[in-house]
Length: 210
Ligand code: PCA
Image 1: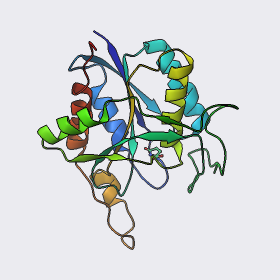
Image 2 (image 1 turned 60 degrees about the vertical axis):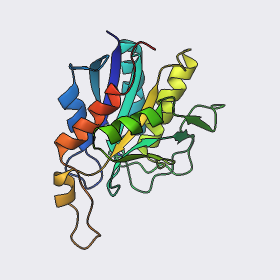
Image 3 (image 1 turned 30 degrees about the horizontal axis):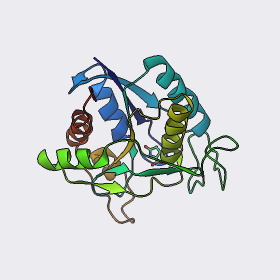
Image 4 (image 1 turned 90 degrees about the vertical axis):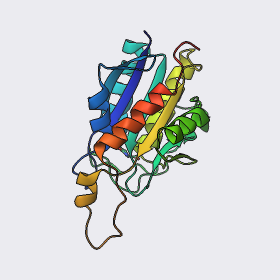
């Protein structure tokens, strides 16, 4: 059975929890659709994240890659269409670094990569499962965009551009929404079980034999 690499992120910024990590942990080692799931938890620090990600890509030789992260404030699960070759952080990473106007890739790397995942098939599968979701045209300029860029770059450089690779942003969970300052507009949230179900349906929507 082919392996799908599933990643989530550690908590970051003022958030006490990260639902992407909870979903990745919940699905680790399981068989989901055509896939054997291998999960990895990434640090919210670009260079350490890139190192762990490329190590996991080389170790697991996945037939599919689903990267996930928290987008606090988004009301639905989203699939990112594009990763751009820019880091421009509005908040520091977990190492305290704020990268401004820096490239995400090495010298000469492309300006952007498009996601290689069948995005519409996953949207349709979510809809059929009673899960509203949509395509996002920006993953931001923080660590999630960086990680999608690096994953697509590493796969392309290694002759694996045909491996479906997506970034899925998930809404806040109750722990993140409860910790949000009361003087800010409240965060929309989904229970962790529903976020995990959306990740599971996304993996199920991808045919492992094609
Ligand atoms: N979300 C951040 C980085 C880690 C995470 O879960 C982002 O959207 O860039």
